[in-house]
Image (tube, rainbow, N blue to C red; front, side, top):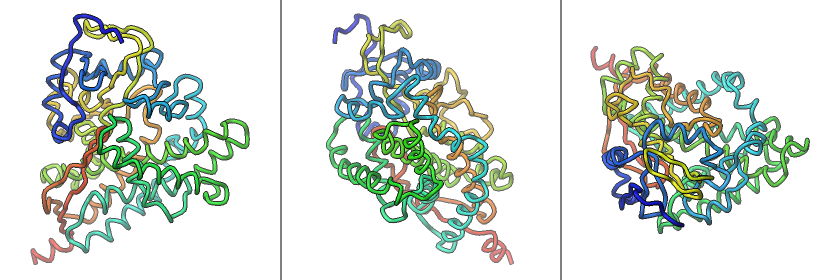
Length: 403
């Protein structure tokens, strides 16, 4: 590819394990360097400023997803035509299959059941005193909820978390770590193909609705399994890691936990600010369909461009004091769920699940604190935690101590 002169470039490897531990200082340097920076390490451009990322995410005609949202051609070839890797009428027709199921009205009807599941989960954890808030809490509810909604059987659900993690990891460079994850992705894909059938899916489920669309001629048969996979993957990792990041804030900031505990209506604000501060999906790729100028740099047609949501959500040009968790920021304009036609279809469900967990905790838990050091999970695309040891005391325990 012929490169244009005067481009702003960097030799930083955005996917290195060391950088991903704390990418934000480097991301700030890239924001200051230019609106579009050419990354020599993996041959792509990165957009890190809020307005640039938001504008590009909404402009699918120039920044197309239809050529894949991953970095490397091999992975993009397998994505094309799916709900993530499509634009325009094709994308709209895929989203329309489950439009009613993910509508605000339909999601709101799930509130009571999700609140009950969250309460049961927290009730089972509290007697332990200490637990891992990632594997025993943040992962459990979203996996349970989305798997039930898709209608897959209980047997085999243990493949969902590692499979979704591997799916997102495949959007980055083909590293040895990715090669190690591929068997989990294959096992996940094989399982969906096995259980995503009329005789295995729960009647009336979202998965059954996908098959109904095939029978009615609204969806090509070859799109059915990819669409189920997409909703399963999208319904877990963003939610799981967003909830875990929020719980970490509660554990490290007792002032935040105390305020939310005293006013549970702040549950939504806590989740939104955690999503902004630690965007679970750090970025997706697009491809330019024509030459486009950004902040004086011409990005050539056919370039891979990373829309870096994590960097955009800490852009000091848009957010005041962006590295600070502010419960009262009102950060509903963050880009953690994307923007425009490719905004996350399941974001309403994610918010409902996060709220349910917070409410269950505030009704039962007095103190919420770290019981060990959090462990960062390595994934080139997803930012999350592998372990979050938590210690809690309940209202009853605290009252017993006082007496």
